[in-house]
Image (cartoon, rainbow, N blue to C red; front, side, top):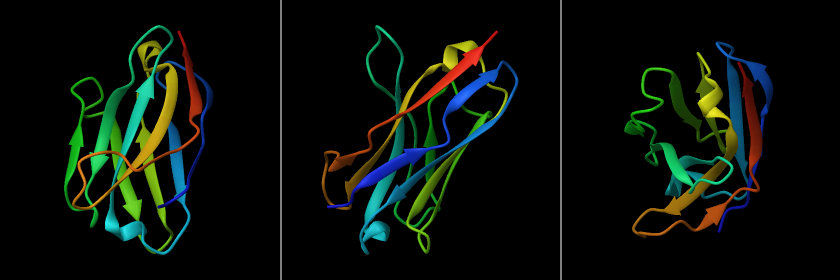
Length: 119
């Protein structure tokens, strides 16, 4: 099982950009599909984007498509989320998640990183 640590969150203004990173421990990172989720106060956790094990297939929630880009570097055991044109409604705690190939549930969650977008 991988251990996940997010970084890169912060306080920005609307229209700014941020890049989140998710560093994974272990030598089997490439055996996991990865995803970013977020949870805003009073709301349920929702998926933002996901990427397959090799990095050549991605999915985005409609609310972020065209503004966010998910990527991964298997050599560095790291996943990224480039967030551009940020909006106040993007304010949330962002979590990375790992799901081992062949399984249908998330195996590991990070501790979360806060992103706050002011108007």
